[in-house]
Image (cartoon, rainbow, N blue to C red):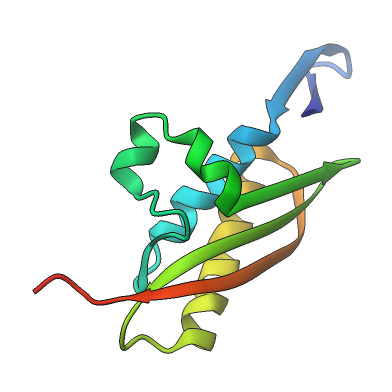
Length: 125
């Protein structure tokens, strides 16, 4: 699935085309945003920033589910947190960061960002 976004010429009210944003792209934005939060080690399937940069979308599909309907996004994601971080606070930060990133980059409205803590990882020494 993809989400269509109509683009208008700023000088006139004329429509100049349509932009299609694939759900996988929205999921990738959500994953990168989540991993930017202190206390998030990886996505639940083990995908980290390096792997996502290398095109690790197959693994990401299990970690981030995105549903886009009529310009509204619902995100369900599973993360592994770093031991010692406050789970409610870190989860709230992830929700906020994901919502802001998707809305800023796509222009879509984010209704829900549901977080599942799938594990705890020890920080590298």
